[in-house]
Each structure stands twice: as structure tokens, then as C-alpha cells.
Image (tube, rainbow, N blue to C red; front, side, top):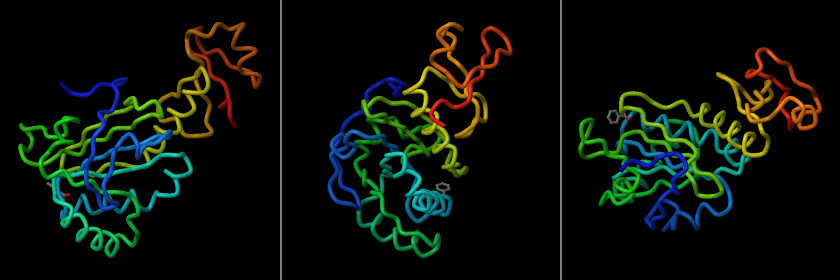
Length: 211
Ligand code: BEZ
């Protein structure tokens, strides 16, 4: 069965361009992103892995470790990294996991046979410090992902894990947040000393609490 939000991200051991990885141990106490791509030496995937490398400091700032994965073997990953670095003007400094026997792909349901029965689709899993899955996302092979959106989701997840707020459509770090419905107005006054604005009783905005 497909993994759902709140499930524990399956643990596994596998080889990667950074050496053998024991997934939960590698994640440690921080956040993680595991993302699959269909195949090495393909154009969209090359731009995607380059984009992730370019955002390396942004992920690190948020205490997020990132790992890529496909069913290609480790030698293929190692050779392709040179191409990514050359063409995308980056240094790939995160692991690319080799899954030639599709062990991890099966655990994470990354192969969607009616799309492609041999390669992983473009899956993303954001994993919290509790090892639980906080976001899943699936894109087709033809469409490269927007990795800035993943940073935006991480910002929201980290904020809403600490404060009793949610983030509205298209929210970006620094913008007003929504007070969760379970918080009564009287409690909101103490929880959100910067104040709050009531549009409807169920729609209340407050400045971002940690800004
Ligand atoms: C690509 O990365 O460009 C790609 C990979 C597999 C199928 C289609 C496109």
C-alpha cells in the first residue's frame, strides 16, 4: 500500500555516491527529503539534481538532509554526477542512492507501472525528525519539480510544528499566518502577542510568530 502522511518512513540500507547509507541513521535527528528520478543521463533529471545542489545551503540552513534515488547502479550515478556538475555549474554534494534491485522503490511505491514499469517516477517524501512522512508528491517524468516549493513547505512544516498556526495559500516565510481553529480568541490573545485580525470567526490572521 502507498505510504501516507503520518506513516513512519521505511528504513533501509543501500549504496550511494556518498557510500553505504542506513537511512534512519543517516537522517539523524533532523529533517529529510528523499526524492526519486526516472533515470540517470536524462535531461530533466540532470536539471533537477543540479537545482537541488544549487539549493544546498538553503536545505542545510533548515537542517534538512537531501538524498536522490533511482534504479540505476552506483557506477552510473558516479559517472552522471560529473555531467551534472559540468552542465549545471554546481557540485553535487548530497547522496544519490543506487537501487538496482528496486528494494527502496518498492518500499516507497516509487514505481507506478501504468506510467512506467521499470523506472521510478518523480516522487518526493519530506520526513520529519520523528521519522514520519510529512509530505508526499508525485510528478510525471516529463515535468521537472519546483524545489523552491519544497523549501516553502519545509518552512511551513517547521513553523507549524512549533506554533499553533497554519499557513495560507501561496504563503511564504515572513508572511501572515492563520490561527488554527482549535485556538479560542481568548487563548489567541496570549499565544500571539503581536495581535490578530478576525476576517471570519474561523479565519484569523496573525503575524508570523517567530519573526
Ligand atoms: C528526463 O529526465 O528528461 C526524462 C527521464 C525519463 C523520461 C522522460 C524524461
